[in-house]
Length: 253
View 1 (cartoon, rainbow, N blue to C red):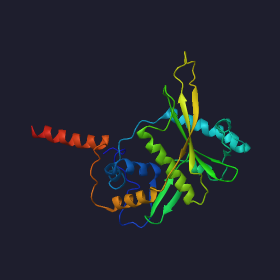
View 2 (view 1 turned 135 degrees about the vertical axis):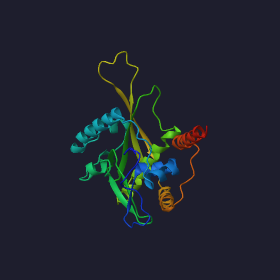
View 3 (view 1 turned 120 degrees about the vertical axis):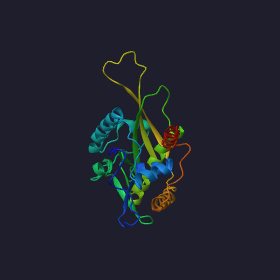
View 4 (view 1 turned 180 degrees about the vertical axis):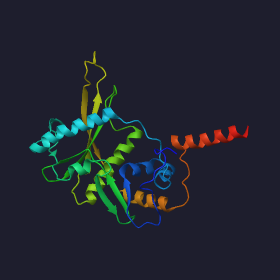
């Protein structure tokens, strides 16, 4: 079987007492589809990998470099000033670890023995020392960017998990985080070897009170020997179901 679909590491063992590592994205997977989550974390069969968003990654890397210039000066980036926010990029010795995928900031939830991790894009801080969680997003659309689409609920959960993680690590965290949203302008008459972006800062006030209950549900799901029912709205569940049915029907001919 392809290595992409069968995992051999970080598979949940109900008999183990070692804290089980669970990333922010896997929590979001559980919230989206419990059957896909169970197949991934308990049985080691993940969803097929998507294509890498290399342009988004480039925007992410360049924004980090740019905000780091102002971080080293303890000065607000012009985006922050234009938005009217009294804050500067937060300087901390662990920032690079918090940003790194597969590391990030960590917290062991004692109620479930789950080791929760998340890699942030950026952190700002206000004059009172309250930190502000910041996430970068990139897209290209003709309309104004916003956070109103149903699929963007995952963005909001992402912000809320980051806010929760930093709160659990003892930081004073602002309930309002910000999305630095970069929208590629396709209305230019020529390409001229460059893509220009309209950049907006969108505030979002998170509510992470759902997280402890979700972690409890996740632990119960992982401990169970029963695979959760398929999610009728999940494309992956429907593909698995229809593929098996088509195969059985074909073989009966």
